[in-house]
Length: 177
View 1 (cartoon, one colour):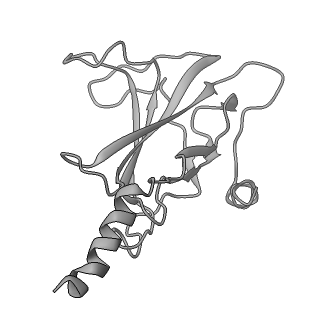
View 2: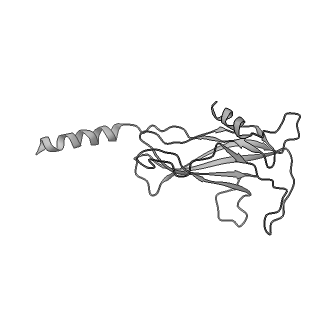
View 3: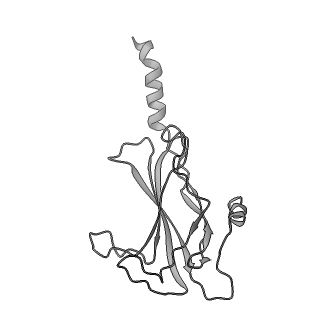
């Protein structure tokens, strides 16, 4: 009887004492400080937390025009824009990505009205590109864990240095970095 349980016991002990190593989730592009004009395409590349012992389920890309003041219920929690929810292929969670992130995103033009909303112009503003990623790492948790990565970008820069506006070819070149 013991010989039948021995392999399972060994695996359980190894698993219990093996640290969970995950990749640090990172927004690779756009880099911190990148200048992006309203309506411009900008390269987007995100390195997921997914690894051989970590499953990633999806990630959501959000642009905050101001940092949220606190984590509390509020009718005016934050301002910004949601680019979408994406996934990355990682076995066994998602063998084939159904909604991969595009190689570039388009910066909204906040000076234009949307529906009942009123647009507003702003220049040289620090915005926060955030990625929330749902994942699990083999450790018990009630629901998936959520990581947060943030890069600061400059919206509608007026400096002599150009705002980033990638065409499809330039975006592919930037993504190969």
